[in-house]
Every structure is written in structure tokens, then in C-alpha cells.
Image 1 (cartoon, rainbow over the protein chains, first blue to last red):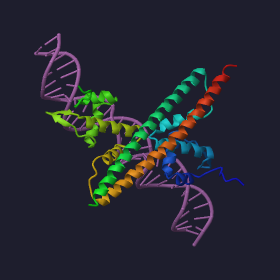
Image 2: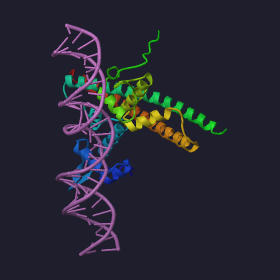
Image 3: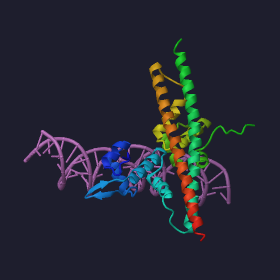
Image 4: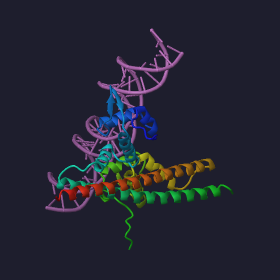
Amino acid sequence: MSTTADSYSISELAQEFGITTRTIRFYEDKGLLTPQRRGQTRVYTPEDRVRLKLILRGKRLGFSLDESREIIDMYDPAHGNVDQLNRLLDRIDAKRQQLRQQQRDIEKMLAQLDEATARTEVALKEHND
Amino acid sequence: MSTTADSYSISELAQEFGITTRTIRFYEDKGLLTPQRRGQTRVYTPEDRVRLKLILRGKRLGFSLDESREIIDMYDPAHGNVDQLNRLLDRIDAKRQQLRQQQRDIEKMLAQLDEATARTEVALKEHND
DNA sequence: GTTGACGTTTACGTTAACGTAAACGTCAAT
DNA sequence: ATTGACGTTTACGTTAACGTAAACGTCAAC
């Protein structure tokens, strides 16, 4: 008895991730998802679900759908000649650099927020006079 | 002899940050920057430059201009009554949560990229047969 | 005196990522 | 047999964040 469902409806996914079915269909339109069909109805596999998860993760990081697609494609079976594989390695590295930059940006912003909190708390204390 | 300029032209800032003057004027239109004028020409102070820096940092993290504005406003002199200050603390905390989520997302993506690199290198080795 | 580099305003155009609505099919429940 | 929950397609609308172009002013340089 496994706890992993092996298929999902569009509304199940929509609810789980807090998005609309319109959004999911839109992602399909853009080629980010390719669910199967039971008749006319879309049926999503666990792999589809993972891809959706990756897309939304990208979104939270401010990635465009094209960027998310690129990242997802990086993960799947490496296809192509030596030249293409090397270019892939370069693109992966570029993304790594970008993510590291984001890490630095977050650190600075968090520090900034700490200062903001401190200032605000001071202002609050001054209200007690 | 200080190395800190005390004013910048619009094209200086544009070049330094790799954006267009159109973008800078757009930010002003949206109320994110309020440079002074020498006649009709915009003159930017170091503070303006910092604000611009913060905006672009936000951009790299996928923040909208409104979100960046909010963050910037969090930093400046706390104005308002106790109620407003408390709501400010809440908003600061919410941003902190969001940034922490982004940190987690980045960690996972970096791990994913490491896997991708490994897979690709394997595929490259297999080309040497 | 005109060319070039820089600045300005005004305004229409563009792209991404959906929202929203219409019009319809399907199937279980009342 | 109709209501309701779910699914579908098609298509027009919307917002953010600029790009692009036109039309103009200013000032130093040739």
C-alpha cells in the first residue's frame, strides 16, 4: 500500500499548489507540461507533478517560464554530441553563478531587514514616553 | 580627497548598472526615485544611487517594483503610530519569511544543478568509447 | 553653423503570464 | 430532466516593465 498517487487531475494539482487550472493549461501551452489524455481530459503523472513543482520553484525565484524550462531540461537525459554537452555544462554553470548571486542578494536584504526591525523597535520604545 | 562622488548624471548611473536611461526615468515615474533638477536636467545624489541599487537587487530576486519600494520604505525613518509600527514589523517579518523560502529554493536548485552536471559529465565520458 | 553627445517630454508598442468570460460536453446526484 | 461539479476549447482583456521612436533643447567642438 503506497501513499504515492500515480495520477492527478488538473484541479487536484491546482489545489495542491494554490494555482488555477488556467495556469496549468497555460504551462502546457508553453510546452512545460505534456500530460496524457483520458479521452479529452488531462491526466497528470507524478513526473508531471514534479515538473510543475520545479516551475513554481523557479517562479518564486523570479525565473521566467523559459528559464524554468531550461533548468528542467538540464536535468533530463543528456542528449547530443560532445559540443552540445559542453555547452550544456556552461549553461549549468551560468545558472549556478546566478543562484549564487541571488544568495548574496538575499543575505544583504536579510541584514537590511534586521536593521529595519531594530529601527522600528526603537521607534516603538520611544512611543512609551 | 574623497573617492565618493556627490552627484551623478542619469547616463552615469545607467552605465554603471547596465540599464538604460529609460529605465531610470521609468523608476522615477513610479515614484521609486526622486532626483533633483539642475534646470531641467536630473541630478542624482549618492542616496538616489543606493536606492537604485536596492531596486536592482530586488529585481534579481524577482521582486516587482512595488515590492522593492516596500522594502526600501521599510528601511527609512519609521513614521507613524504604534499600530502602524506594529504592522510594519509584521510586513518585515513576512519579507523575511519569503527570503528564507527563496534560500531553500536556491539550495534545492543548486543541488539539482550538481546532479545535472554529474549526469552530463557521465554522458561526456561515455562519448570516449 | 552644423555636427555630436547629452539631456528632455510625450506617446505608442511589446512581451510575459496569466485572468476572465463564453459556450460547450460529461457524468453522478437529486 | 435539471442541477452541480468537473472538464474542455477559444478568445479577448489586463498588468508590469520597460523598448522604441519622434521632436525638441543645450552646449562644446570642429
